[in-house]
Image (cartoon, rainbow, N blue to C red):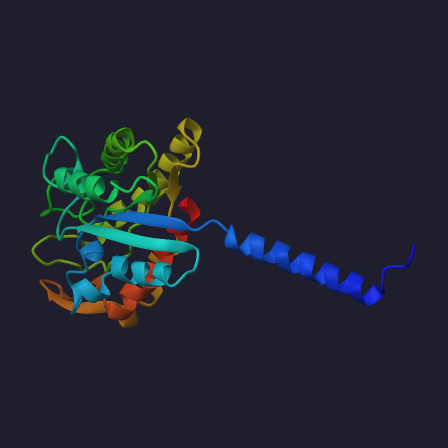
Length: 261
């Protein structure tokens, strides 16, 4: 029996490796995403020059669409200026029907991963003005739980990302009053989010995720460049991200979304 030529042996091995690599690449999992963004004016992008182009949800869609791991990314922006977790409660029957309508429309494609990204708390923390405010940390916890519980029943395969609310200046006062009291209340929402995620992980692992917590300190440190200066009853205040801030917020939100996929 003749010895098999070394050159042909090496060539055969290289061809085998190429086939394995091509097969692995072609069979790599690619995901369809449908994301519902729930929130207030920051989610809506109402303070931005072009909300339909610059809102955080739009930036997130652009970023995810550019990634090869996703075959499609569809979003619905359910951010409403001045609204609170109270407005989104199923029993309030104000914003929740809009969330259900958007989710039902996107969920027609059951092969896609449905994600609810929730950032509420700014208006909840106000001293007066928004619906139900001031909302205590305990009530904030309960409101988020009620929203997630009903949505998870309606959409049992959906995933949830609770995004942490952002810092605002202690002189914030427009049609609503926030001030230092409001900011202190908002700070007390953050551990409630931590506890909620722990609770849901015990009940149903890998369904509810915490967003990235860096946003609060990051925007406090960089509010001059990343927030829109607004005139209020107590001078220039900082509450809403500007266009650059919206891009940075999208980068923060997307970390939590990617954890949920």
